[in-house]
Amino acid sequence: MALAFFDKFPVNEGHVLIIPKRHVASFFDLTEEGVLGTWRLVQEVKDLLDSRFVG
Image (cartoon, rainbow, N blue to C red; front, side, top):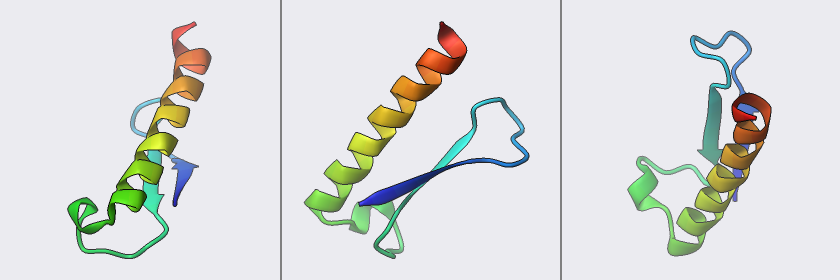
């Protein structure tokens, strides 16, 4: 439902861009399935960042 990319030249370490695969004007225009799928990816990225940067 979404893709995540580490920033090549981040201002802050660990900066990640998460974008839905479906083109919409706003996150709030996603379907419920799109919101939930994107949020699941946000959680996965958070877990990865926590393990990499928090300890």
